[in-house]
Length: 130
Image (cartoon, rainbow, N blue to C red):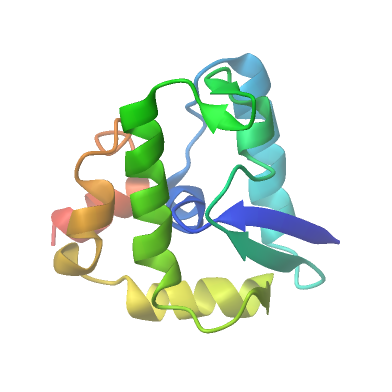
């Protein structure tokens, strides 16, 4: 199975606990999160709308309807992707690498701090409460 994921969604998936924009989005995100845990899943990385974004109510014409938010999202993607050297990974191996790279408050500060979900994100909370 193959998933296409934005850079910053790699961190979101680590902290996801069932919140989302609406029921359709949350259900899709839950399914993607389950699939990414399979050792048979391949993840293709991107900094454009992905398999999570497809059910986002803010996505119009393949872009976030808020231009400033769209720029911030692409910035977050690129901050994550600059630490990875391939376009495709085995999902389990990728998330092991993510755990190694993003394991301190400093390593996520530019990526996660302005995220609207950081107060609910288990990944963010774990790193910032150390």
